[in-house]
Image (cartoon, rainbow, N blue to C red; front, side, top):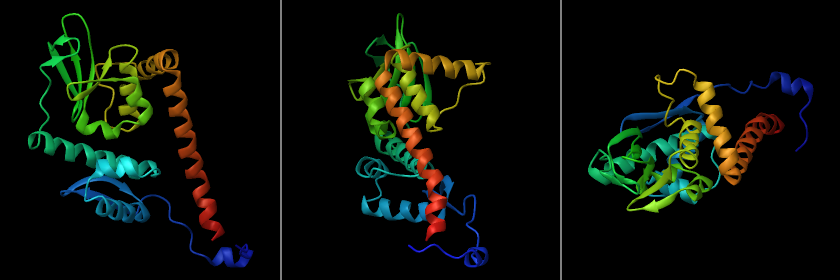
Length: 217
């Protein structure tokens, strides 16, 4: 396209910053976003029969805001389809009978047994995990499971990145907690770490080039 003259550029309305729309599911706010993302949310959900998990599976690129909205919708839908509105905490695990269970977000459980433990992600909400993260776990009786320490750090990192879970207040040094997660992932799952970093760099590049593309129109 031809570049606009300086005078034309000065008289053009400035691109709005911030969000000018929001997305809802069943009357609940999923997240704030741009009007373009809101329109895309409606279009993609209609194309996939209202199934947010299917949208995440079948389409490749979303802005960070739209991806988070779709992931929240997928969690809500999976929660309802499984038990009519509530995921039940697992009674057993690959590591034995569950003695203690903490819900990190709907369908994701941090469990401990007499000798071991880990994190269990119900199959119905697995769409919120990246393909690289899924490869780090193993399947068992309707769950993707991550053993504590080495594997568990991957799913905790995913949930933090997607803002589906936050570090509990009982952990005082949250920065140190995150760094330990990162160190564990770099040591035991370097392929996942590279995939995560590549995805973050691509998202940042997309955000930085979007204003330039808009200005060039």
